[in-house]
Image (cartoon, rainbow, N blue to C red; front, side, top):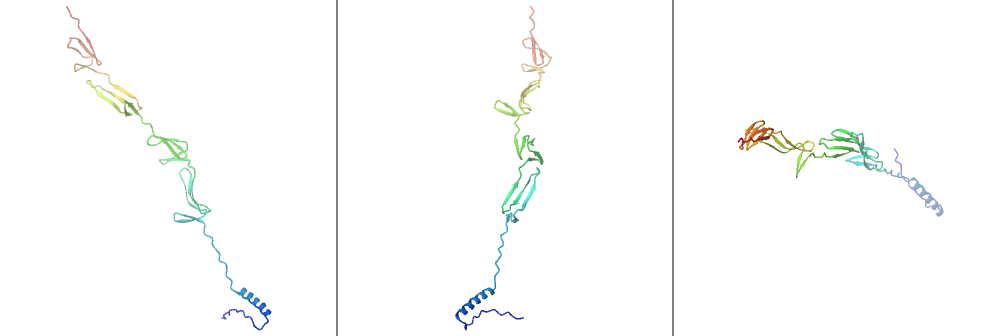
Length: 213
């Protein structure tokens, strides 16, 4: 192998000055032309994309996407200019205890509240508290306000019904009470004044005998 010798530019000194000037200019042009040329460096543009959750996503790609029970598609996306956007469609139903409730439909939840599905939002109104107001006290529906038993074994009292009304209950009297003694229905006796008395459904019917002369 022959090693290529480097090219040198030599200018002779035996020539006239004008000729030397011309040759000098030509030699400079030849040397400049024969000098090694450097290729321009190519600049690689930076890659456009999104950095999200520790991962890199190219511009225009889908980071995550899904569909809910209402058929609404939502997700996270990388835009063409490298921005992250979260997309969600307008909700058209409600999910209650695993059931799909369409927009505009009403339902009752487990607590008894009346609910309306309004564009994906459940608008609920708590059920009114049913009961009875008596004086300064409130009694729940179905409760006993007061109760007692008389000497005849009859139970009476005041009650709050299931629909919030006050009723006063009293059983039909089956005896009479006279001077602390219980007289059964349809029984007769003579009182201290000599009157003949009879018990009739809780009422004493007494007759005073005429005094003979």
